[in-house]
Amino acid sequence: MRIAIDGTTLCASDGSRGAGIEHYTWNIVSYMARAAREHELFIATPPALTRIRRAELEALGPNVTLLPSYGPKLSFVSRHGILPIRMGLRRPEVLFSPFGQVPLAWRGKTVVTVHDLAIYEHPEWFEDRQDFSTRVLVPKSLERADAIIAVSKATEAKLHELFPYTEGMTHVVHEGVDLADAYSALEEMDAVSTRFPYDRDFVLYLGTVEPRKNLINAFKAFDRFLESRPEQASDVRFIVAGKKGWHTTEIEEELMAVNNKWSGVEPTGVIQFLGPVTEQEKWTLMARASCLLYPSFDEGFGLPVLEAMAVGTPVITSNRGALPEVGGDAAMYFEPEDVDGMSLALTQCLLVPEGVYTLLEEGITRAASFSWEKAAEQTLGIIETVGQKTTE
Image (cartoon, rainbow, N blue to C red; front, side, top):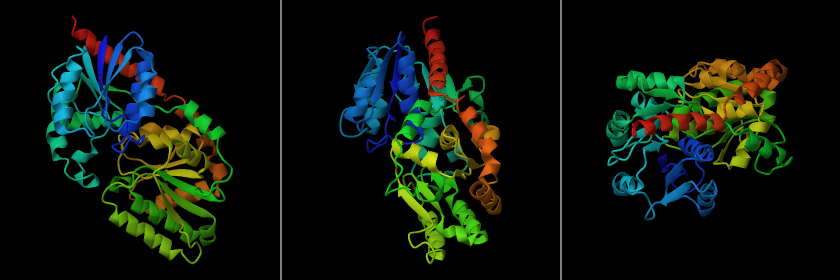
């Protein structure tokens, strides 16, 4: 079978590995290529993809052909006009889009992955100027899809609520975690680092800094924890790792307000923003954290929860969206607006760690049931079913 893959989101726009959809696209495509030896894969790659990562894709096997983009960036015309023509010339039986959008000029069979639909209910959480995507690209892509993959049951339910015609054509395929990468990173951890606070306990948030992540309430909860245990102000930090997103002014103001309040005890700040981190640094932070605090108002999946469980780090997360679906019985939950509840969970993890030992064991076991191999095999099976229908 000949399968075209829209790899527009194989990396971030600056060429970095990216996160979220970029992380999903890279893993699902690379693992699927390994599982699809009998198929020909034609992968359209973005302009920013580095030579190293392009070589990694080419090394996946002789069944993989890359279709590099023309020009320094992907324009509307090249994405929706030229790209589908180039892919069509390869005469694929089906096109797979890992990020929920199909080029407007594409007319063949299609499988798309839907990650998140929160923008339809809370556009204020997201970047501005996305009307065309939400009103045209996404609805048209769903209408033309032959099969839709949802990354969680929560996403599937929201999809059916917003677009009822998608019922009967949706398949839930959970994301995965690469335990080999996690364990390899852990083996290479340095005992001392000038960048990370390994000399003391720290609460970790990992992800984009944006309104949906509920960091303002998280900072308030950490402040209340310190108010109840002021001696901890010199011993515990809150580390925020990830790129700065959009609408961050109020988040930054709250961070500075908490740091100013405790500056007499900790001049460098009880809350520290690291910015983007590498894959190696991510796993190192995850493993050394006293707990992961993931307070989002809503998530289509919530991969950091799964990754923290994989390395035996306690997880405190909100009870919204797909987060309970991912965490199961291996995480502590709170209402995202409940600052006191969040603060109490921090107290338990930081001061009574033996009380969450059972969660650690359950988390490791649960994380092992989510793998990219399984996700790739399930995704490939759906694509094969759709592709075969074209030849009947």
